Image 1: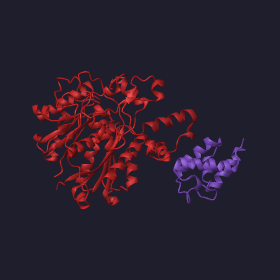
Image 2 (image 1 turned 135 degrees about the vertical axis):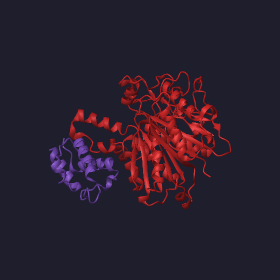
Image 3 (image 1 turned 90 degrees about the vertical axis):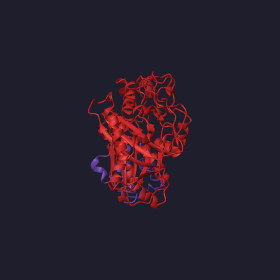
Image 4 (image 1 turned 30 degrees about the horizontal axis):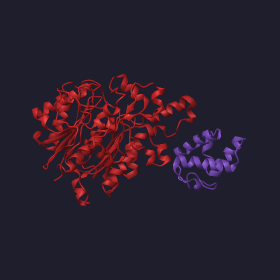
Length: 412
Length: 82
């Protein structure tokens, strides 16, 4: 029997703020979290891209020195977001064997890997930090969250590039539907605003090069969009069965109605130009949720601001929804946050949950010349979502041809 | 110039705090790293690596198991400096 699954806690540290309240407020106000990188390594390496969506509040302000030293930035962000989410959920009193973790990252502990490599080259093996491996491993966030909260019902990690964060939400749904846990700490993180990914993404012509206008660089759906903006941060959702949430009197933000994952089998980085894998993911997710296409009235799009990707997603949505797609309020929140890679789907799931709860679709900033080939209903202002029942989807697509879609709806 | 035992203790306590979060004043000569300070074997290695760097000494892997108490480590480092 299908269980009702609900969201009872949310947490984040993002380019817009160090918590949910500040992040959401900045998002609705149309602010950008994208700034010029203030680090010597930008000039040192003569990087072609000099800006990113770096987290607004440094972990140094909220974590102990020894924790900072023993945890990669990506895990630091994950633990900060998890703490806020778990406390927001009322620190549920759940047996460890019924508490799971489904977490995500796109790349893992890149800073730790490269820092240790530098030490090896300069000082030899004896000076290599003994915690290098547990810091760089992609499951470091899941393992540390599991330890922090006593989660013993499995701590899994999804790695599917930019689809990872949404896939972790889908994994949590499956985890709970399968009866393997009552509560799951789900989310995603990324902390790779580092010269190597900036150089590598630049080398593949994936990043915007608007160095003179960082806040305007992430401009999904504009004719002059020229690539995505690297972001960082983490977001966490506490997801649990309705039965468990009601029994403990938890507040409920929204229902996680379902989710699905498909793969393109087309190209390692390019999306299928017709978006057929993405379209199947949307249809499969809606089928699992039991919703009709006509019920969907908000979409948080993947919309990374790349010339090819934005159009492919639009074609996929048009194939699914037909001409009605141009009437559904859409939010392309990467316009404000940049692209958090493995963290992005979790942050956008959080935005989707809040959009339902607060009945407002967040703005899409930097809209000055909307591409006539993508006539979606986007706005630089928040779009009200009315008084009725809200059914929303959040899309993520990743290198490797990964497509993940989560469906959230008003809790009734 | 070689550091005194007191100076080595103070420096070692700083390392222990940086690596584990244990309060500096809890790092006393008679304390055992594992039994009293609850430091696991990997954390012990992070302390050893940092101590080698800080005091300019070599602490062979075979020697680490002999460093049971803080006093053992202070004595080893003090004599290794000389």
